Length: 168
Image 1 (cartoon, rainbow, N blue to C red):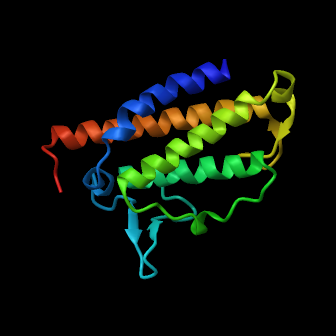
Image 2: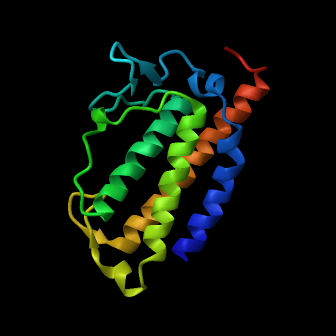
């Protein structure tokens, strides 16, 4: 079921991701939107605040693709027994094409990881994204749910950008 669910949501990702442009990724849909910004070191860093403001700010597609890449990279690091880098050390790749390549590669890695697991493996403790380990099946369901949410957000922003006449 988890593999089928991943395949299903990935088909939606394959609809939206290849169509992304740099302009779409950087378009701020509302004043004060969180986005990714090129810093003095040349790297693209996401806006972030802890604790998160309430209500949370609007976000750009660039920010969403960074967020997706960050949490999926961390999940894969945990699956390989590696300590993921801190969030602030994970930059956005800088272009829509590079972000899509990053996310596509992460999907391939996660799919391969799941394909290598048996049903009984899904009961094993997995340390992410919670503080206390839970079954791998719950982490895989979380990945599918988080991916669904992020791809849906990208789709809504893409369609809104088009409906507004491709604003700058």
